[in-house]
View 1 (spheres, one colour):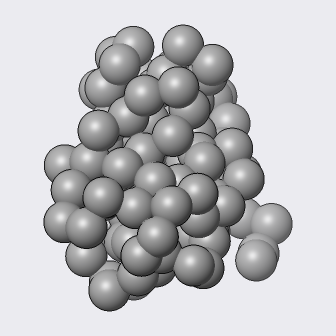
View 2: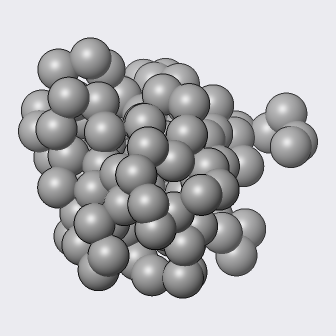
Length: 103
């Protein structure tokens, strides 16, 4: 992982309860705004490389909309089969109302 942050989007573009996916340096990143804070994770499920963007976010976890595997947004840990591998998590910060992610 590099130490370089990239602007992702304006904070207002990911309101509480919202999420947004964008590609940074050829990597799909998903930012989720939960009651526990902002999280940046891979936008791709580790099970079969399916998009997580339409997954349900609840209790600091995201559920893959294709096969139902859940991942911890803070650690990326796979919590349910069929996923056995974690998803990457990325460092995130907010500067001048911009969300920035380090991929």
